[in-house]
Image (cartoon, rainbow over all chains, first blue to last red; front, side):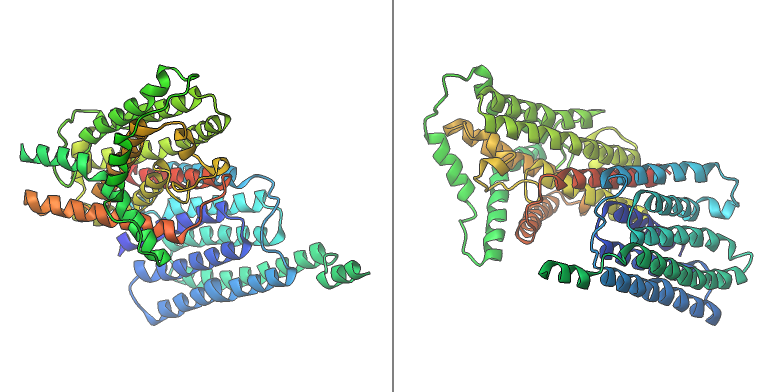
Length: 213
Length: 302
């Protein structure tokens, strides 16, 4: 089971890089949704099955894979933006930085004093790489929605790290899921706030009226 | 001994057929009948029978270009194992010679293009060199990764080492590697989405624009060299991607030929469903392939 979990974590890290290299917002949101679904499957792979676990898996997939992405896609459609046009740093440099950070997180994870059963797994490097990708997205993108995506990625990184602790503290999984929901709502608050602040002047109906006059 | 003879015979005779298969696949996608499979051979025979025209402004470099390119590619073909059989020539560290034989071939193609003094050919040469210096790290990182997994520095061992079992054990990193190698296969052979081998508009051409001034047998050599390069890099890809070995020498040869034909069909499908990328997007895709390969190396080194 651990082997499959490792392959899925590789996929998570690849999705990080895809998001760094893409300028299409809808595409990035879908990528984050897929990442969320993978994270939802992961606890089921490394822990023995129970009804509790199934409920948590379903909750995470629903929250990270369906609800949050739908809300953000709705916000994107309302704001009429499709692309991140002017990032503070170009897409190729951020992609290279992301690859560098991924490599460094592998080095860093080797230096950490981990429990022996966690040493050979990809959880720690993957979580650090995802965290750093989230930071990169947050700092280099200028659109509010890209920043929200960065925030979600950052949170995914924290979630991966939290999965290591669940063996010792089963309630941590539950708390994690709850925290996710909280974060989801929090994120949406920020989205709506940002959108109303940034785009209130870019009202398309008013623009059309200006053009006709 | 028979293996070496089959190796040489396949290397010399098979490559143009790949172009024929790609052409036929594209024609099938477009709903046409298409040129016969053997059309590239007819083209080559026609070109060899023709006379050559050399511009007065060119020097010996222009005439040496196609010869050096073809011979470098032929030597590279001797270094690569076909199917699951060891290559005729192999020694420790031949993977570096392999990569730089292509470098040499490219150097002479570009320098012959510059020798004509045509501005279009200079532009094509600049593009070719830029893209290839982005593609080269990927090839090297991929070769290093394979060398690391097989614990050898000779191409024959590296490429015959992968087995279906080993494939499943390293799963993700092998998949990443194959993705990177396929992108490099398309980029190095100037196929869509990097370059359109059938285009005839100088401004958008990369490889084809460099060979505009060649004619007759020299142009035939260039066409044949391009097919051979596709064959050699395709064999490298096939060895890594489909590591099937039955142990029976003849069956392995048949599997290899079928794999190469399937690869040609795959390239034809990619060319039919994709449009050519904008020039500014090409470096992005090449950097992406480098990152894929580097990531796969990271997973293997760990």
